[in-house]
Length: 213
Image (cartoon, rainbow, N blue to C red; front, side, top):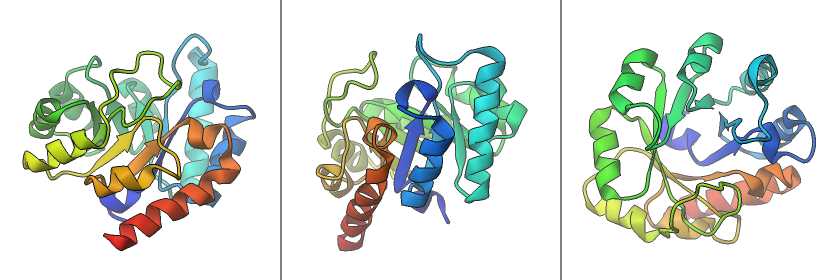
């Protein structure tokens, strides 16, 4: 599976997002059709220290069982320690060039909110972009102003052709708007973590839209 295909349905989750054990949620989501997973254990309710590392390893084992890429949010040292498939960073995290040097050939994703940030990320070594927020969301308390799918059109019009996913408030009823704007896939948190049995519906909506294009 190439990177664009791996990004079709990108699930992001930490224990703070789940109503039951995260490993069970992840396995249900994988069986339902997710194509990539990002471990994002943050916030006051997130695990710390050994418990955090232990959960990361458990989730990574589940991803390896089903051959799903495992990405770590922000924490380069953790990603290297457990040999994750890649790292995803935000605009306020470590400099992109520095992260690229540390992780070598592992996947590097960067969160972007406009064409300028996307261009700089691409030039600095990002393999893919996470663009948003597409729609209103309660998952991230530090969420920026809603941009809508139009920002993806702006990024593509600016000649930025590397793989990207839209993120923020996406579910099966609005995913097509994001994909038709030029995204290779969608990234979701609560749409799956709060109800993993609905993953299949979202996966079908994504694939049906991609087949149409």
